[in-house]
Image (tube, rainbow, N blue to C red):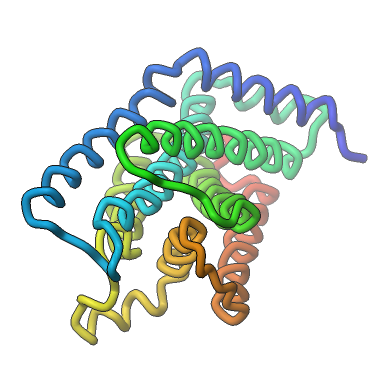
Length: 253
């Protein structure tokens, strides 16, 4: 039987932790994106840049939102789990009358809430610099949720397997950051050589970023085949994370 009160308690704990450290959890990513926007606005005004007949900054803004949400969605659960391992509080969760899968679900739900807070906050800040407007709210929420779930699963997976900050940051540098930069966040795929296009075509995150960007355009088109490809990787990532979590591999330091 699912313990809803326990799930609620974990979610409330993580949200309280998020808001108590708002300088690092909320203001820091917003400040980072403001700097990105200011730099790219300066570049655009100087060189008169445009991509696919759109303003360069308007093209890049949705990618910046997705990028910062992805990074925070990875960091939050992985940092939480590693920190709990180091101070020993993870043992209290495991001894409580709540299953491991419920703990995982609690972490994912809280990450989704936090991810939406970060995304909407960045969107509001961006509106002061550029004329940005969502044209498809349903798919905006859909693709944002997909990104949060995928990177949260990745963060939980890393938090389970590793015990130190060094390994967590190393994994981020060698996997999360390249995945963000090779997703078309800062460029259009049409300008890439054919051999590099091949890499992006097999990167499901590229399609998520591209579809999320299209939510800000009036001519949004839902592509079934690519979305099946995306959902397959989301289900796979959740299944692997849940399996490792249930097996308890390296879950106690």
